[in-house]
Length: 151
Image 1 (cartoon, rainbow, N blue to C red):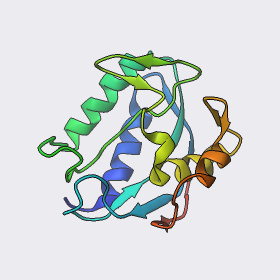
Image 2: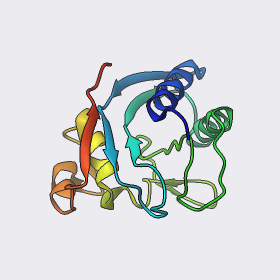
Image 3: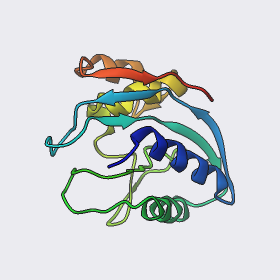
Image 4: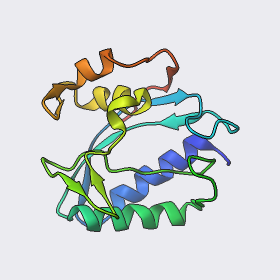
């Protein structure tokens, strides 16, 4: 799949170029064993916090364009890919339809999402539950810091 760290860096640069988007914070990069389809390289994950004037759907469209630009191909569900950009939260918006679900439906059970999110939003509350409490309910043994935040 190429240089995993380079794909993350390019994605962040391209998000910063989206008209109406401003990156506020970035977590460290974490490495985890693959999830779902396991016959692939370990995953690298990070979270960023942005401020945007875009709607959730406009942001989704921009992020999917970045994925395509970075050669994202959807062949195998949860299979190898150059980049995967998800919208986890968007202000206090709750949305659930064919195109977009906010908050992200599986984020509460994934250490590779919650740990990087905690880096940038320690006091976050999701569905009335402190982020720290969500982290304490899941197995975090398989996640390790790969690269310290350089934001």
